[in-house]
Amino acid sequence: MNFNGLFISGKGTINGLGEKEAWKAVCDGCRRKATNLKLIKLNDVLISGITSVNAKGFHMMISVCNNFVITNVNISAPDESPNTDGIHMSKTNKVRIRNSTIGTGDDCVSMIHGTTNVTVENVKCGPGHGFSIGSLGHYDAEFDVFGITVRNCSLAYTENGARIKTYRNESPSKASGIIFQDLTLDHVKNPILIDQEYATIPGSVDSKVLISDVEFSNIRGTTISKIAVVLACSQSFPCKGITLKDIHLEYTGDPDHNEDTPFSSNCTNVKVNYIGEQLPPPCA
Image (cartoon, rainbow, N blue to C red; front, top):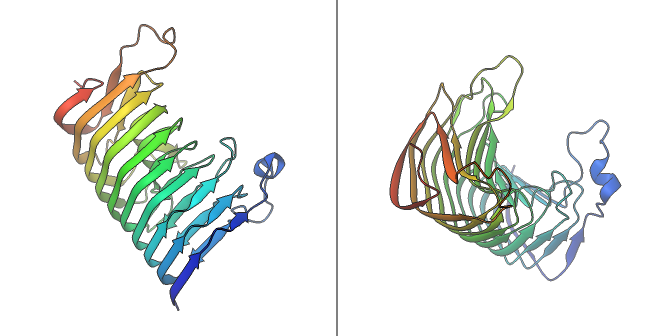
């Protein structure tokens, strides 16, 4: 049974009291470390103004929910704190995250299986692992992901910018209708990334997650990687309908690092539709 109607607002802080030893420790008998705010089976929720710091695990976990608005929240943990995702969603529909600042040791916003109709806008991300869809394809009978928009956001000194990641596993699903638009990047390691070789389940060959109808549009800024665009799709289920529009990234890493490597893109098992400016140059 779901609970309908929840309003959480104020200037208070949820402090998970995470610190280096807790982040390194293994939790015996449990799969995850403590979450600062866990929201399950809720409808019609508004979260506004609160601060979450130093979670031992996720800061905010949303699962099996519908119709969420998260606005003006501040989430922070050191960049060396593993698995401290800012906002983590699964099996949840109709979420809007806006006007917030998130900096952690993992994804600023992560959307795994069953996440649908989500808009993330005007969010400052960093440090952390960027905006991630996935990991997908990890478990049996996963639900599809669709209708995701991330727009008008900035990322600074993050591991990734816009990322979709899937396991090499036998679990089939789909991820479609995804837009990353109007993103500003500052010293981001992997600005644009589709990674269908994120992790391998023993005995598996290719990811069975079909990624389609994805647009990366007006993504600009700086990167510390010579290969700034990586689209590594599944050989068995190649990506379809991938568009890159008006991409302008500049290399600001160590000028002596891989000095013989050109500033470039890398694409496998995908045909890309290019529109407008492309820097780095498109895949051959």
